[in-house]
Amino acid sequence: MLSLLRSLWEVFRHGFQPRITIQYPEEKPYLAPRYRGRIVLTRDPDGGERCVACHLCAVACPVDCIALQATEDDGGRRYPEFFRINFSRCIFCGYCEEACPTYAIQLTPDFEMGEYNRQNLVYEKKDLLIDGPGKYPDYNFWRVAGVAIGGKDKGQGENEAAPVDLHSLMP
Amino acid sequence: MTALYPLVIIAVVLFIVLNLAAGLVWVERRLLAVWQDRYGPNRVGPFGLLQPLADSVKLFFKEDWIPPFADKAVFVLAPGIIVATALLSFAVVPLAPGFVVADLDIGLLFLLAMSSLGVYSIVLAGWASNNKYSLLGGIRASAQMLSYEVFMGLSMLGVVIIAGSFRLTDIVEAQRKVWFVVPQFVGFVLFLIAGIAEARRLPFDLAEAESELIAGFHSEYSSMKFGMFFVGEYIGVTLISAAISLLYFGGWLGPVLPPAIWFGIKTLAFICLFILLRAASPRPRFDQLMAWGWKLMLPLALLNLLVTGAVVLAFS
Image (cartoon, rainbow over all chains, first blue to last red; front, top):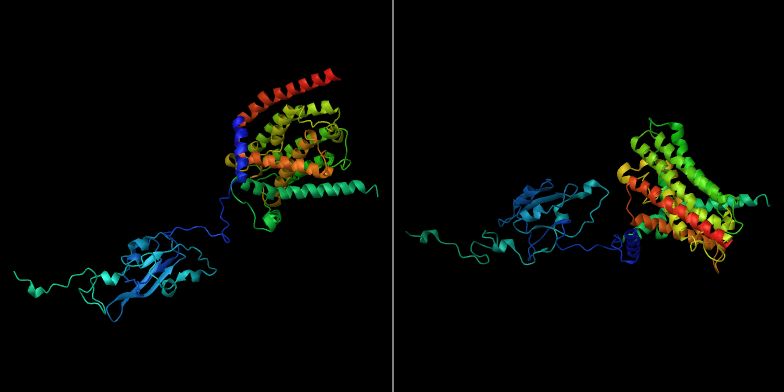
């Protein structure tokens, strides 16, 4: 009986405590930097596309919402010809981000993607590609990769030794 | 003109009670939210005040479905009974001195009788639904009502003994010197507990018991028939709160403010207490409910009656 009265009092006191509710459209909730929201494609620090169209994200995607087509530019640098994410299927699991070898695809703390038309949830590359490097400001895949592309030959990458001349390898 | 006066009172009482019953939906949701660190409905209109309007519009547009296996006539009648009896008992509740539909000299008995008749609504609804959960709810309601009705009547007899009248106006006027909650504190506590059981509010809502009986007697009801049960329950809460403030807290008596305002404040305070009880207390098992009623409350009520009677007799 006494415990009942005490719980009455405790519940009554809760009326004077701060609210937990966040009044959403007016008040925005805090989202952690690693929140898994809207997916973006990022760029190198020098402005080039990071995505090398390796299809790993599309393979990792459990709901098959990523579609892309690889192509190469004149310098031999791979990039996606088109890159399409169907957000009406996406479950925001973040597997694509984990699979990406070049930090190109990233999830962002933004969930306000509501649309009246379902078709509008299919994002094309122009909708996905952002101008910055996202969560990895200094990383440049092509600078550290041992691949020759236009403007960078083999052995010119960071921390990369010049290629060994095979003819100098004598028994 | 004087012939019209009772009609005006009836209209005013109906207006206040029905609006209060609708408004209580909002009050209850807001208060529960406040005690759970939330805000509650605050979007429809200023402070969410138009929420009852939105709710009732929604209820009216819901499909009014009568199950094919139900006893149709009784099924339709049941929700009407609870609202009718609850509204009828407001006929004897004086909102202010002289402002009462029918100032019966057995007002208190009439109030008890009408609020007891309300249980027919629950039992008939449970029976007519032809659904085992509803029937269980109905059975529970009748058993609960039987056992709590007994000491509800006994607990307020103390007040009647001291005031020397069953007329509610006389009972309030008898509290000019001191409110009856002081000499009749045990009676007040017993009446409060019985009142909660009478209004079938948590913690005594075993007839509904969402978690065990999936809403019990009104599982099969939809649309405005469900709404009637809802309105009936809130009118019941208002009625019990009004009765408590009339019997134990001096009704409209109070300084400075006009009588009707005092009565309103006291009634609202008890309605808030009802909601707080809902927010804070767990639901007992049914056998615990019965054991409480017969083994604890009834002897206490009898003892209270005995002592009150003896003291009044000794001092008269």
